[in-house]
Structure formats: structure tokens, C-alpha cells
Length: 267
Image (cartoon, rainbow, N blue to C red):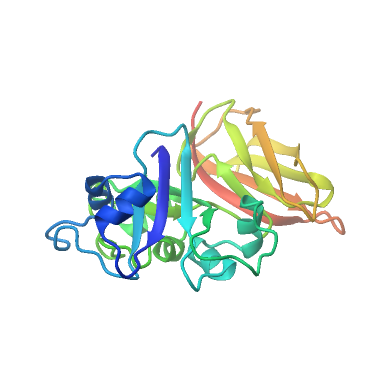
């Protein structure tokens, strides 16, 4: 789902109208996105502490998820919500100069995307399809109206964390998406000598793309960006598999900081 979405925690005195005005959205859009309607809840009823997903009006070229810092938040607690380290959050948000110092109402880019639930899906089936742990999905959607791990409503918009390790975050391709030859691989990384690697493996453990080396725009201790086009070397033997993005230990060459992205392999 393309476009800009904001994650906001309701505060005392907030109304759907005031929230919509503040973030350039519409009351009806917020109600639809957060299932604020019968039989799930009374129309438009919100409480302090609830977490709302707010779509901005207009259509963006790509997904952007912004989290509005709530009083009492830290990068550690926000990282727990999205299953990433504070360092990854700081790498996504270069305006942060001290990971121990953030303030209320600061807008932060967070590593997540929006997934629209289809009829008959469960949290378990979505977790398997995307290769994202159920607990990570539950944490990302905690305190949202209309969200229950045991019952998902058709068209409900779930917040899904992007795949990450301690020092690598993959932004594109999204988990569960179909990739084709030439597909972009994008993300951020903090890597020794600014070098990371990737490969594509199908579900028969056959290599579709053997290990390739990729340069990051900056070397450790800074985070840098990376981008490449995926070029198949062999035909896949299955229709799905995993894209691995990782670094190698300078000491013994073993794989470290592995990120595994579940994908559908198109031809």
C-alpha cells in the first residue's frame, strides 16, 4: 500500500477531528483505517493511549511510515515496538545526534510497511507468507483499536516491521513481495569497510543469485545506504525463497548480521 502513514498515540483532549486536522488527513479515512465503527467499537470513539494509523490524503510514490514520539518514549521502547535496535532507528533518522535524547512530537521514520488483510487470513498465515514472526506483528500493532491477534478483519491495515538485524535494514523488496530480474535491493547498513553481501536462494536451497558484494555509501561506525539491482544467474526451482543480506566477520569470514527476506521469485 503506497502513501504516507503516521503512527500516533492518542492523548487526553484529542478528537478524530483535531487529529485529522493536525496531520492533514480526514476523519473518515482514520475511522476506516483503524476500524472505528460498529460492531468493533462505537463510531469514532477513541481513548488516550490508543495507537492510531493515520493516512495522509494524497498518494505517495512509495510507502513512508512516520512515528510521532509520545511523552515517555525512548529509542529503546520505540525499537521494541518495531523489532529493531535504537541504532537502526538513529540510522534511519540522521537528525538524531544523541540516541539517548529524543523529545515528544518528534517525527521519526520507522522501519515498517502497511499490509491489508485479505478475507480468510489469520495472523499465523500472514506471518508465514511474509516470513515475519507473529510476535513482531503483535508488538507493532499493540494498543491499536480493531486489532486482535485471534481475529483479523478483512481490509484491516496491519503495521508490519521491516526485516532487520543489528546493523542492516532492508527496505526493498518488501517481505512477501514478488521480485523479478532487475528488482531493486535497497536499505541501510553499518558495515566494516562499507562492504556487505547478498544472495538469493529458492526453497529447495538452490542458488538463484550467488553471493554478491555490495558497497555501502559510508563505512562503520556510520550508517550508510545501499542499492543494487538483482540479476538472476540461474532459473529458480521453486516459486518462492529468501533474499539474504549480510556482512562477513573481518576475523574469520563467517556470516554476521544476517537479514532474511521472504520473497516470491518471479521469472
